[in-house]
Every structure is written in structure tokens, then in C-alpha cells.
Length: 112
Image 1 (tube, helix red, strand yellow):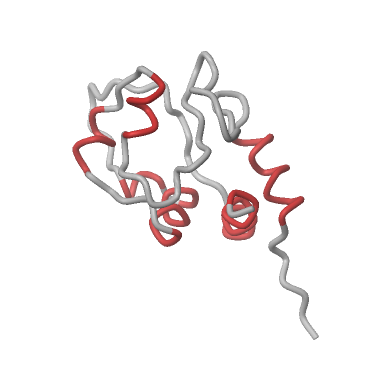
Image 2 (image 1 turned 90 degrees about the horizontal axis):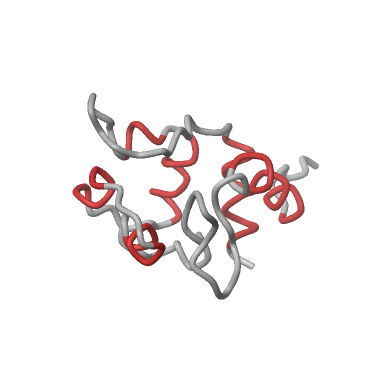
């Protein structure tokens, strides 16, 4: 029997390692000084969390991506395929992606 490597505890560790420097994940609150609160991102339209935070990420807003499980998994693994960046884009988001196992664990953690 093969054990599924995705788990909630690992997802929380992935968030702390790759996201918590800039983002929060709490039922209430705007976010941190550097980025928006990602709580409730599932099924939201791209850019809405940034706007609620008081910032702007024009490329993310232009793409009008709905953050489904599938689009979040793709973003977590290969963000440039979801929202390609162009020279001159203004964002402090330097996220390059995480591996398959980390992405699935992160999504599982955010579902609880």
C-alpha cells in the first residue's frame, strides 16, 4: 500500500517556508505589511485579495483567473504559466513555484 504524501501538517510547513514571509492565512485580517491575507483565496477572482489588502498587481487583475483547486495547483507549481510576467511589471511577488507534493499539501492545508 502506498501512502499519499500530502498532509495538512506538511501544508502548514509549506506555507511557513514559502508564503509566511509576506502573507497571512487567518479568518480575519488584511494581511501583513508585504502581502495580502490568503484566507478564502479558493474560488476568488485573481487580484481581489491584493485589492482587499490595499495593493495592486495589475497583471494578476488583467488575467481574471478564478482560483479553483486546479488553477491554484498550477500557480503554486508554475506561476509564470498562469500569469506571465512582462518587463516593467510592478510586483514585489518573487514566487517561482514549489514542487508537486508541496503544492498539494498546501492546498489540503488551506481547505481545513
